[in-house]
Amino acid sequence: MTTSAPAPIPVTVLTGYLGAGKTTLLNRILTEDHGKKYAVIVNEFGEIGIDNDLVVDTDEEIFEMNNGCICCTVRGDLIRILEGLMKRKGRFDGVLIETTGLADPAPVAQTFFMDDDVRAKTRLDAIVTVVDALNLLARIEDSPEAEDQIAFADVVLLNKVDLVDAAQLAAVRAEIRAINPYARVIETERCDVDLGEILDRGAFDLGRILTVEPDFLEATHTHHDEDVKSISLRAGDMKPDAFFDWINRATQEQGPKIRRLKGIIAFEKDPERYVVQGVHMIVEGDHQRPWKVGETRETRLVFIGRDLDFAAIAAGFDSCKA
Ligand SMILES: Nc1nc2c(ncn2[C@@H]2O[C@H](COP(=O)(O)OP(=O)(O)OP(=O)(O)O)[C@@H](O)[C@H]2O)c(=O)[nH]1
Picture 1: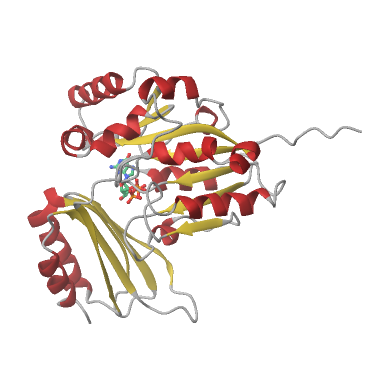
Picture 2: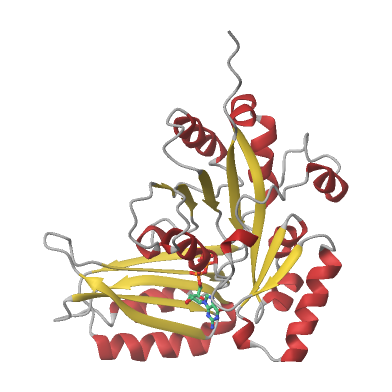
């Protein structure tokens, strides 16, 4: 009797610079009615995990990797999580990996070719890169990861088209094309893409990657930009007026340096959790859901940036405590 090897599980890597819209896309995949079940691996930058709280509540299994960047220190963790998942095959149709905004996708992709066990049981389906139309051109100037993420993409979601005019959109499109003439580029607002365009497409092409990076199957890759740092702040209840006043001021003053901010805020006397998110000067906030019975009302806020004045941020934050 012969047993044929089971079909390898498709893996989709979601990448893109800080704040481009990766979690927005992940939430879309997890909430849309496509009849498929995904295991999700989320890696984030900043020592207190916020992303896990921003991913929609689903019955999907979510594995968090917060101990470092997926492209550097935690690749062993990634292999272990994948191996664990492979033992429970049949429980899901695919794996989604959301990398940090600072990750070089090459070592993540390499994992699927270098590790024998992983290679045998999984199939890298596509690298999907989300691009922030408003901020890409500036990031290409100062952040090599932003360019690497596009170079490795099989599909690019040119996102946040609502924030730019036609001329800027054309310029961003031309930049993407110059970096990667092969990827499919899809313009989106809040990652509103037909998921059939990005999932289970068999788009990953090792041959093309080898033309971008001839030593892809051998190289040990350099680490990401060490100048981008994060500060994690925690507190109990906050005073809403003081908080909004401070966050608006801080983002106006330090906006160009704030690559990303995100947090869950407990406002005094407010029965609901408030989520605040920002990329440079643009800040959004909304209530998320009621604090659950027995859940600790805790404020957690992360700032990520280059040359941020961390002392000023910490002092401002402290002054908003209730
Ligand atoms: N105006 C606008 N805002 C968007 C769009 N897509 C996402 N956003 C907002 O941009 C911010 C960042 O979105 P996320 O999906 O969290 O980005 P991310 O890439 O997961 O961020 P990191 O994981 O921190 O790197 C959030 O405030 C989103 O609501 C869009 O198309 N237009």
